[in-house]
Length: 191
Figure 1 (cartoon, rainbow, N blue to C red):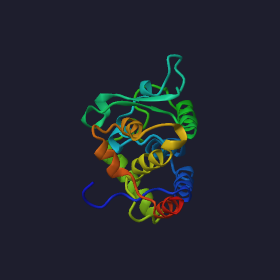
Figure 2 (figure 1 turned 180 degrees about the horizontal axis):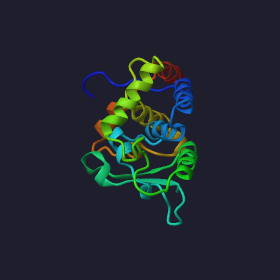
Figure 3 (figure 1 turned 180 degrees about the vertical axis):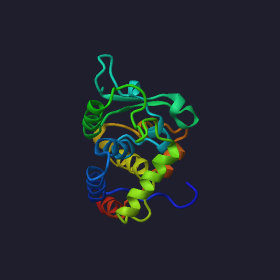
Figure 4 (figure 1 turned 30 degrees about the horizontal axis):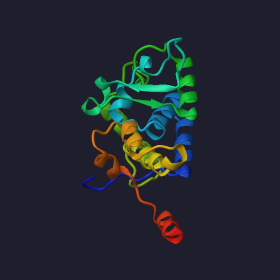
């Protein structure tokens, strides 16, 4: 990827982000925003445009899969992303506070947030937490990198990560994956 890439989010950073959300004016919504990025790899525009029917199952409950429809995805790259248990719980908690209709992420005025508002929300949070180099894309990049690092544990291939990310090219997916210097040392040591 050309230019400077967004910094990855470590486990301690994620804990700080979630603590920030808990102290915010809208803790349930803000927790979902963070987890949609880090645990589902959604782009800011997808988070802003996500609708409850894309999250709910046939019984009207939060399902086990997030259906990112082509209409909300970049270059119509819709996909199905299995819901991480933390994200599923956060969505269930948020659903209790809403009608379960319309946009998942609602502004304080009642309408859907704009994609730029999601970007700005992340900018403000990262500034408040003094996390330099992070952006609204950090969660997505973390999701893709962590999925790639755990391929062998799930019996998957890089193609599976590409599909989860909604990339049309495997080269784009590879550009998101951060290298691990310590892992590289261990790998060479095993040779």
